[in-house]
Image (cartoon, rainbow, N blue to C red; front, side, top):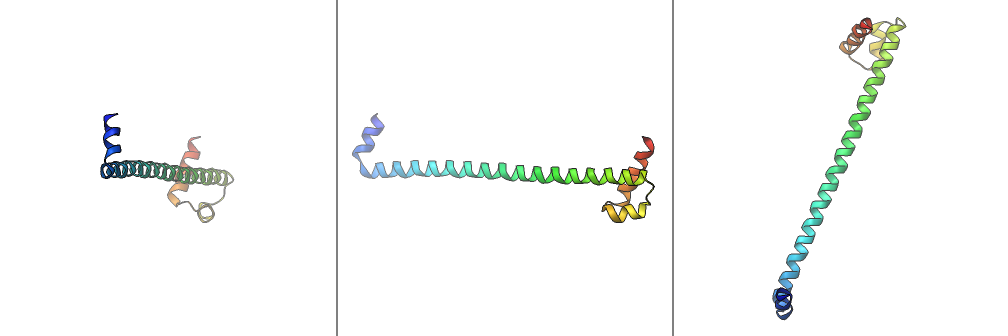
Length: 97
């Protein structure tokens, strides 16, 4: 109450107080905006990573099916976009099942 009374009597002090309060509100708003932006970026990166992993798993499943059908590795290599190592790894895992 004393602070409010003091501020109401001195216009210059009141202006300084108002400016400081505005600065603090603006700073809090900037921080909240930055936090929200960071969350949005994180979600976008997570979604992109999930999609990439899903596409990889789908390609590997197709490779297994093609190998089971006896399709040559060179054909699978061209069609799948996977590396030869990935195809050979799938081929060796197929033998384990």
